[in-house]
Image 1 (cartoon, one colour):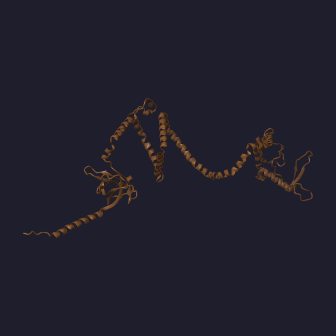
Image 2: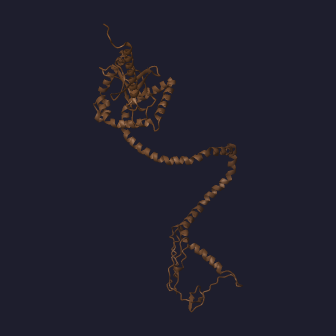
Length: 479
């Protein structure tokens, strides 16, 4: 009896169609879910294989696409393929190759995508400085051989001895009262109370070391590298430097008591230094302005020195012993006469000084005082009125007829007769007529004279008053 079934050709076609459908679905799925690829360089692959997961905060976001040798001899280049919905990887991202749980086995890539403010990584490669690999147990055991283990044990024992050592009696007397009798561990605990301030100041110092502009820290490190290279090239000087440092350290150790006292005074010194530095900071702008103002003059100094050089050469020759002896002989008579003149002028200079003081304290203030003459006051200084009067007399005395030059007054005529008191022994009086009756006299007529202390110095006399007090017209108030 013959069995009937599917034809072999038809069965083969069905299997081929099923394979093609599965491959097409896988390709479509891979092309639609695959996300960006990023490159990273790590120190070693740590048995990492393609297909191992990439995780962010413990969540799978992709897998390792390829593991290849890196640019360095011990480097490994990783290609990571992330899911389409994975977070954007920034330029400051970090990654680390870590072991999975014991039950999982293998390794995974722990990715930190970076801060939101950083630019996207794009096609750039994460450098080795931003990647890390977990240390494996066999590496730890291979590093701790017999010699390193003995050194590590000695280090731990020395550290324990240092923490439990107590100071000697002499050292204890010179230490602070609150730390006396304590071992090093107790003193270290006491030091932790000042740790916040020290850490804050250390943070300020670290921030200052970074510099104000990008690349300052790199330039500092490059400078230190050049210094270290220079020291390494001259080993003899480097040995001398180490020996000098050893002597300096020994000197500090020998005078640790004085050093402790100096450190105790350091806070007050820093307070005073802060005030002094602020004053210096305030003084720097004027000094800077002075330096800028002095710069043109300093630039002219070389030219002035060059111009004065011939004169200095001639002056050196003139002051040479051969020339100076003749010059001194020529100047001897003049020097003798000058000495006599100087000795005899001492009295003249003293009198000139008194005259100058008299003029500045009495004569000039008097001449600058205006004369108070009531309605006829001019308000100008008295010496100016004197000059004006001279000009007036000159005008009144001009010659315009055959009688010559003499002063003429025209009192005018009127019903009022006035007479002047006799001015000499003859008793002759002068009469005149005025159109108006005189109202009074200014200043008031008086025969009294001001008291003058002839024995005193002019410079000590009071400034006289020039106020013109009025008096009666007939002069009856005269004394």
